[in-house]
Length: 170
Image 1 (spheres, one colour):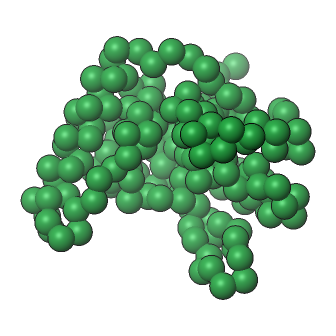
Image 2 (cartoon, rainbow, N blue to C red; image 1 turned 60 degrees about the vertical axis):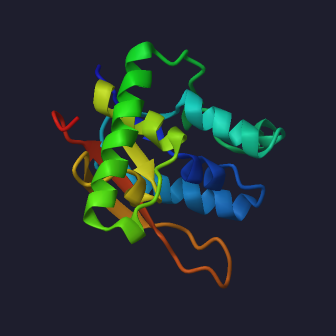
């Protein structure tokens, strides 16, 4: 049986691991709705996201126990040379394209997002993120989107995206 691999961006994993169990439960339900069109999928937290989570809080692993362990798995796989090369090309291309469109709006895509994009592009994996702008339309098509849970009473609701890589653009 073939599985569709879905990579989780840091902003999604952070919501799933929220210390507030009601919030993390909402994130879990939202993710399930977002991926409901898929059959036989597995959710993966890629190595660069694990690094970013660890960098943000050395205690993030302690929040994992209240998450269903069957929900997703963490990857500690080494980053391959081909991924390093593809991530560098992706960053250069995205930054160059943004600057040519509008210099004032050009912003850097993070190195972590470039790695996530590279895994998705090279291995035909989907991505779940709240930051679609980190994965430009030239490289990723929106497969599905749902409203993400509200994180506070004053914060506006955001959209959670399921993105599919477009092949042959890099």
